[in-house]
Length: 64
Image 1 (cartoon, rainbow, N blue to C red):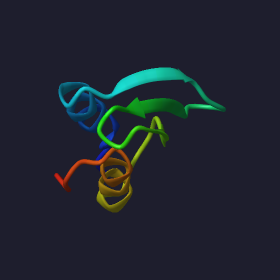
Image 2: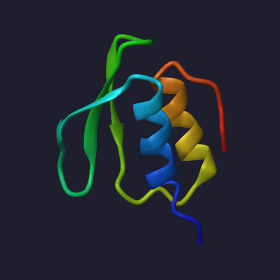
Image 3: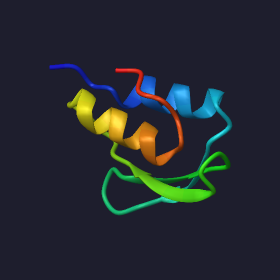
Image 4: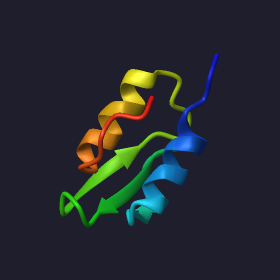
């Protein structure tokens, strides 16, 4: 099964999003200057739908 976390984090960094702090477990809190909000990124995303939902929260278009 695919793990989308690495590719997702790479896309987020390229678009100006930044890591804010560590959350509970393997979750991370990120900030998007595009949407001006904080959002959670799981460390082990196995669903492309979840990866695309994170991109939407960051104010980006679908990529997966």
